[in-house]
Image (cartoon, rainbow, N blue to C red; front, side, top):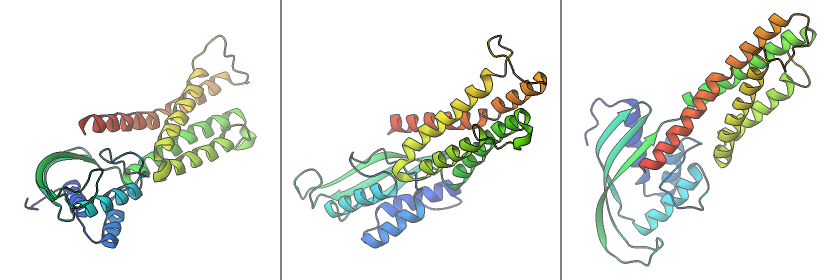
Length: 246
């Protein structure tokens, strides 16, 4: 396939396919580190491999040992948003153990491969929305306890540490799935906390001299949680769609 005026996502997709056929082990590892995000998820990999680039490296080393002449040709690519779907032709000879005894047979087949780009821009987006979520709580604490300047020992202070720890878990390949679930749980918890006290429910009496100001602070607090929750829910939906497609 010619590499004419391709978009950045399609060029990255081609580099990804070229990386997977790199034969030298050292060059393969370096190429994977160059194009694969730390939170990479390979839905076509066998179970038992570590998450992220480490698992992909192990899988490709085993595949190259079993099929040393493997060739991949990208026939077509379709881009939609941050995802690229490609039709690839794979040819190889079975010359090593790969879950089955060496057969020496040669084969060719086609596959549809979907790649989603969720690299640095997406991680920065989530970081920004996580900060916005915490700022909503901080603003509420400023209104509730003005002397604290927003950093209270029972509210915004500890939650800042929780947000930072959860984000770090999400960034690490070894704990990316757990981190994504904890991030969503964090956002939902903050959303519920802001919403329950925002409406004038009879059972939630606002203990403050300025109830209207406190009420408005809860509205801001709740609204600041929505972007993070929406983005994380969209991420979960995309992952499920990719799993079904693969």
